[in-house]
Image (tube, rainbow, N blue to C red; front, top):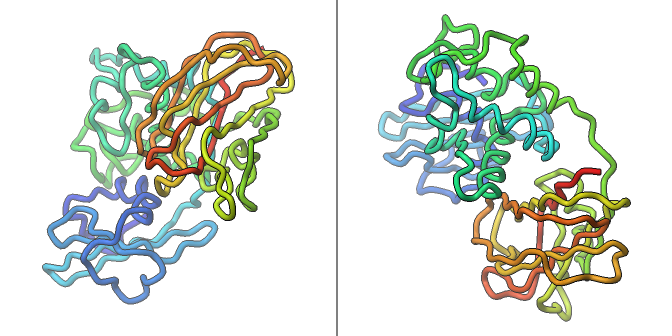
Length: 340
C-alpha cells in the first residue's frame, strides 16, 4: 500500500499494512465516513479525531482512507500488493524452525524477543515459565505479520533486512522501511529468510477428520480444521439449544505422538467461546482415559496452546462451559501438534 499524500500523523504505513483486517473488526468510533468509504465501519483508531476507514474490499484489493478531522483532510491508501486470505501454516514447522529464530541473538547481542516483547503489530515473547502460551502468542504474531498473497511485502520479510532507524518509512531503504534493531539478515540467502520462505511454501498435510456432538448448518465441524480463520464450527443456534458439555473429536487417521493442541477461538465475538475445558486421548475413538489436560481460557481471540504427552489416534476437546454462561460452543480452528 502506498499513501497518495504524506499524512501519517503517527500511523506508520506498515501499521496500516499489517492491521487493515483488524480495523474492519473494531467498533465504530464517533466519526463520519468520507465519501466512497461506506461499506465498512469507520474506526477512531488512534483517538484525537484521527479515523481509519476500510472501504472497498475485494479478493485482492483493500482500500483505506485516513481522515484527520481537525484539518478536514482525507488521505486515500490504495493496495498495490495482493492480499492473500489468512490461513494457518504448519504449527510443527513453526515450533521447530521458525520460533527459535526469534530468540537468536544478532551481532549486537540482541534477539527479537529482546525488543518485541511489548510490541503491538509484531509481538514475540520468550518461553519463560509457560512454553505453551509463548508458542501460541508467537505463532499468532508471525501469521499476522505475513501477507500470504505477496510474502515479500510482509513485515516479517522486510523489517529484518531494513537499515537501522525509527521503524517508519524510508525512501532510500531497499525495503522502504527502517528497523529499530537494524538489519538482521543480509538477504534472501540468509538461513532465516530461507526458513521463513520454506514455511510459507510448505505443502499442506492430510487433514484430520473432525466430528462433533452437534453443529449449525453452515458451521460444520470440518470448518474447525480447514486452516481458515474466517470460518468456524458452531453448535446449534436454533431450536432446543443443547447445553454443555460439547465436544470436538479429531481423528488423526493413525496413531501418533501427541505433543499439544492449538485451539483458535472465533475471532469476531464471544459467542460460543469456551471457558472451562478438558482434553482426552484415545487409540480407538471409543475408549477414553482420564483427561490429560484441564484448564480455563479467557474471553479473547488469542490462540491457545495446551502441551500434551501421549500416544493416540483420537484427541477429544470437551468444552465444559462458555465464557458468558451460554449454551453454545464455537471454534475457528483446532490443530493437534503431533509427530509419527
